[in-house]
Length: 122
Image (cartoon, rainbow, N blue to C red; front, top):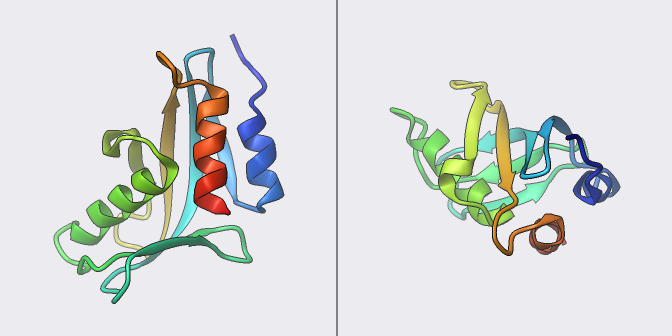
């Protein structure tokens, strides 16, 4: 059963580029555009004027270390487990796409994740 999720409305208001991959009663999967900045001095996640997530990681761009670092930072920023973030495009590119799964279980519902995302992007 498809549902309308206010998370999408909030992300649009923040001008974050994303695509809804799937939306069900128990899970929402969003794909976001990421601009990777490996080897940074400071680790951070922000939103560019172009709508991409800018993810700066201290991990070097070798042997998948930067991609793993970026997945970890995105997961932490959006309040999900690391295994709920997956690189979908751009394995060796600085411009990537990542799928973030928001699983609605126990006390984790739309409002729970919306509060996490608001905190992450404000």
